[in-house]
Image: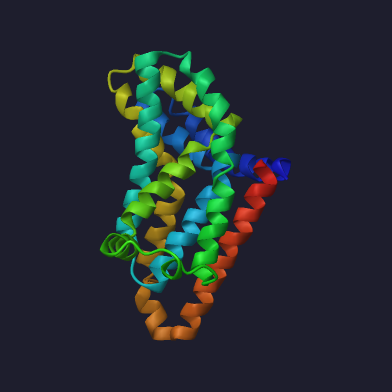
Length: 243
C-alpha cells in the first residue's frame, strides 16, 4: 500500500519539484516550495486530505472555517519551528534522536482520522460520555484549540521524504541564511497550501453555509455523512500504509 501512495505522491510532486529547481537562488521562495513538496509527501498525503475533508465539510455546512484553518496552520508552524529551533540550539546530532520517534508519532494520524470521521457521521457523541462544563462547550463551538492540536499531530509524523526535505534540504539552508530562522515557519505554510486552496475555492464559489441553506438540510446531511465516511476511509488507508 505504501508503494501505491508513494507513486501517487511522486506524480503529484513532480510539478512542484520543477518549480523548486528554479528557486534555489531565492532562499525564502525555496523554503516555501519545499513545504509544498512536503505537503505531497506520502506521510502528509492522507493527513492533508483528511484536513481538507474536515474543514471543507465545516465550511460547506456552516460558514467558511477560516479561524479553525488558521489555528490548524498555527499548529503546523509551531511544530516545524520547534524542530528548527532545536536543531539550531543543539546541533545536527538531535536529528538521529528524532528519527526514533517519528514512525510512532506517524501512526497516530490514521486513528485520529477514523475517530474524527466517526464523530462527524454521528457514531460517536462526545457529550454522552464526557462533560467538562463551559470549557468543552467553548472548544466545541469554536474548534480553535482542536484545530491547533490537529495541526500539531498531523505535523509530527515524518517519512523519509519529509525528513530529507526538512532536515537535509531546509535546515542547512536556514543555518547559513540571514533570515533562516523564519524558514521552518515558511515551510509549514507551504505544507498547508492544499487546505488553504480548498477553503479559498469554497469561499470563492460561495459554497459555504449559504449553499446548504438553499439546497436544504437533506443535502447538508448527505455532505456531512460523506465527509465522515471519507475520513474513516482515509484513516483506514493511512493505517494500512503506515502500520
